Image (cartoon, rainbow, N blue to C red):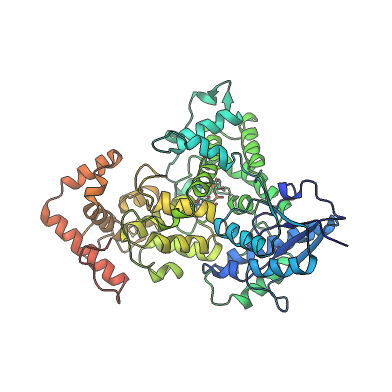
Length: 522
Ligand code: FAD
Ligand code: SF4
């Protein structure tokens, strides 16, 4: 039987409704999927991330076979398995001689380039169809950008609400406000903590168990742990996860969205990012379930709005930034930061209690919520002066939801301010006092967030002041940094010197073999 279209399905395109399947004729067309080592080694992927992708891919392959679709599927442990997407696809093309390659637009710039190379070298047309998963196309995002001096998520978000008529009352936002942040972002307390529901746990089935064993063998030295693997790997499981979130967590989502608590991994977050990014569920399903909860009176508007903003606002916005700014975006480094990632990011072994907890849960589950990523792990690398590319590679390695189009702008733009303010209106920098306000970490820490010199000095606080001192000139150009710099101005020279010395001592302890900074490194 010949092959008309060879339909390429990547590991994060697990959607039977995707545009690549429009007009699919099982009699003439075939699907191609491949597990290749390179996708787990181009950055040093964590075991949990690899396992999630492979298990979800194998379940999707089963769904295709059940539909009677012909499928070429390379397993990672097949004899003679090719190591790269390009090599694996080339081999199938030479075997099947399809008339053309067809696919939904890939999420990663790197992967798109690799597939184009194959299409050229095999002289085979590559038909790339738009990715309907997203609310906004890259073309429409470009139009949104046109003529704007600076991009801001809030304006984009309002446009999305209007355009898709989400939480609207005519042309006005429901409740008379676009944003309910003032009611959200409260710290947790022990009483509320008792109300945190147990998260949905998906027990590994036979396919997942096989994958877990394969990953443990083939990716032995990779970071992370497979012990608690319980992520949704099928559409049905993802839908169940959505249902549980809306019923049990959404009502409290907004209020405790930024809160952190030692040993509490899941809190009131949705944990839906990996299912969304693998395309097991559609953002419209997620948004409509949340909106319905508001109309049924089971979740307050502030929570529903706060949640929907993440999905139709931030998620779509960062994708637009990625695709309009690549490939140059990766090389941005506004603060000229050059240090390597501290080794303890791969183990969690540090006396800084906030960091240790965020890192250890990340390695154990492939998950940390947004504020842990932004205001703990990301905050520390930014203020320490770690090269943004090294930070990006770490984030791309360790999270189950890590795919480049969403990870890169969040890391380089929002968290490390490497793009100099293209994405975020100011660098997210704060002292240990912020962490103290949003969590009880500091109470059990050997450091003190209000102390900036001596043995008890909190590294977050020291590095915060040191960051402001080192980059004062650059930051002065940003009016949103005014209050922080005004506080710095109150600091005398001897106090500044003390901060610099303490920060230097901290860096020397983190990088014992790296020469101490003379102030020229970031
Ligand atoms: P919830 O808090 O329940 O939020 C709901 C949904 O909104 C998420 O599932 C996600 O799809 C979306 N969302 C929330 N915030 C963002 C955001 N800033 N950008 C895009 N979508 C958002 N998200 C990823 O999906 N993949 C990544 O690789 C990733 N890397 C990040 C790196 C850094 C440095 C930072 C600061 C953030 C990163 N995020 C990433 C965004 C965010 O932290 C995660 O989407 C979120 O923590 C996932 O957990 P959740 O599903 O429980 O989200
Ligand atoms: Fe983190 Fe500093 Fe608080 Fe310790 S004292 S938990 S290092 S912010």
